Length: 215
Ligand code: E4P
Image (tube, rainbow, N blue to C red; front, top):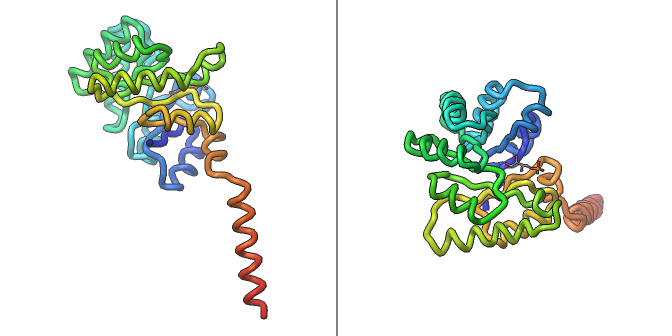
């Protein structure tokens, strides 16, 4: 499973990219607003650091507006992927963009039919939102599992991005449910690498080494 970082904060991206495990980045209007940066500037900067898919979301809600914004964003870098919500207008925009060779990540996916329609429209990625489904008492990981199973049965090549990840357990379950990618917030990414036994193990190895080499 690939790891994307779900953020618009350049310093967070630089740090995690430095681990050598980052395949891409996803942003959304909330994350960009929180960064206080201009969308286009931030997308260009992220694409230079990551050199992998960078999802940037359109603001327009009508098909023509989405297509126009998407074309502008796609011109910023060859790494840009256009994030489009799964609505009738979004599906129509995705179909047009797919025909132009512009990759689309259909976002705000909360059901298998939405994921199947997104794939049919030509989306390269679908993003089921695990955390938000769990928030309303649903089974976010169950949705990822259903999508993975249906895509497998039908030979659909659209990649599944497990999104709205709130805790390390979500990453474990998304991997086992068949997600191709997990897009993970910075805080959760830091939690993923930590284990108290790793820290304790390093401390003990170093202590034993020192003792043996101090005569
Ligand atoms: C995914 O692409 C979204 O940017 C993100 O995962 C949403 O997460 P949230 O539900 O925690 O806002």
